[in-house]
Image 1 (cartoon, protein in one colour):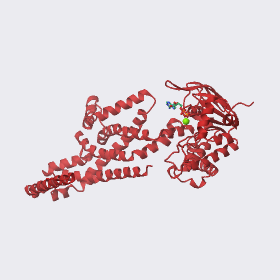
Image 2 (tube, chains in turn green, cyan; image 1 turned 45 degrees about the vertical axis):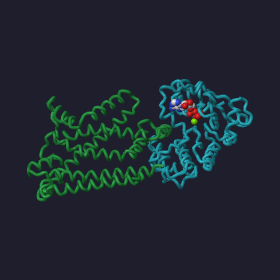
Image 3 (cartoon, helix red, strand yellow; image 1 turned 180 degrees about the vertical axis):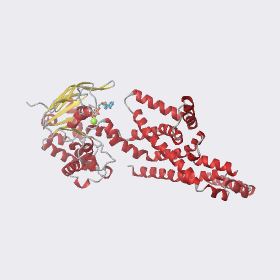
Image 4 (cartoon, chains in turn brown, red; image 1 turned 30 degrees about the vertical axis):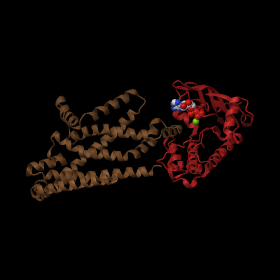
Length: 263
Length: 246
Ligand SMILES: Nc1ncnc2c1ncn2[C@@H]1O[C@H](COP(=O)(O)OP(=O)(O)O)[C@@H](O)[C@H]1O
Ligand SMILES: [Mg+2]
């Protein structure tokens, strides 16, 4: 048979489409949709989640995220500046900190700081929010430090030289000239860090939270236990998506816009 | 004779094994315009950058307005206010408007009030012909306009010396004239200037003195008419033949 390369490709592609459609059809016929829907998205269970999932669980997730982000951003900025400093001990400290906190799973860090240290020292966290949010911020700081450092390094060298030639000190030049420009560059990646942080708050509940500090994930899990039905977790997942999708879209849009704007 | 405004004594600068400046002695009087010419890589930029200590010399002394910048007790941030620098790549602060580029050092370094700083910026922008661009951002300006803003920004600190490092080399040919015009006016007003340039016309007409550098030393110096029109050294002749050909 004489077929051009293009015709052969079309045939193969057509075959793949046909197989996919057949597999989907089989799936649709074989699954008991009524039972599945009843287990994953049962309407009266859905209704029972509200309003607490918003007024309490979502609120707590947002509190953990924002505290983690503000703490992480401040720490990340400090670490990035230390990493770029002329002083070797500062550079060494920042590099070690970043390596360790990025190298250990967040879950392990949470357990060590949230449980391990209080048990070992007899000291206890003054507030259940801090118990979860502080370890989160310490880890976020390590990730954000690398993002900030990349941003600072992306600012052209001549900017620092021009600032110094005007009589600004290194610190003054950093604060008024370099960091503001670095932040413009890193807003999209920082938005993505924020999204990661939203999802990471779901691990905080391993620390055994009180009723008051239940986050979205734990709220969903408790709901599953109460109703013997997976619907609460599905609803929690949808609430996460309602937070994360707009933010990742925003980050992608900002990234596209900054690419167009750059000459 | 009065004390020179800029004085370099046995200035040396190495980058690792690369011995870039090999013992420069140079004084520039108040009000003098000095043009520095020479082939690429001869150390012209490094020399200029040693005058405001953007590069730390590896040997020798730098004096500006009676202060030794190379002294270890020197407050370099303060001493740098005596010099203004204009770069080949403009280096305007891209996140700030034209006016804020000019006022930022006044506000942040001299702690001047905004109204006062803005008034000074308006005078300077008017002087470089860009009064109408005060609210624009650097990216909205042509290269020639950006460089004139950079000159205004450097002048804002009222320096006693201006350093120009190939200020017109990155510009489209039709924009060079505006920038050179501003520089010439500055010279006529009595500003002390050290100008690294390939613009022989400017050197011939505006400079009081020209130095030719090659291999990290001053090979020849003198009046522009002498150095440019009747060079004595072979290396100078060869360089000028190359430059004037293009
Ligand atoms: N920051 C630096 N680090 C290392 N080498 C440098 C640096 N700046 C300049 N040089 C070297 O110094 C020499 C002189 O450079 P430069 O002063 O820029 O020359 P010019 O301005 O006359 O073209 C060149 O060999 C260059 O590679
Ligand atoms: Mg140069």
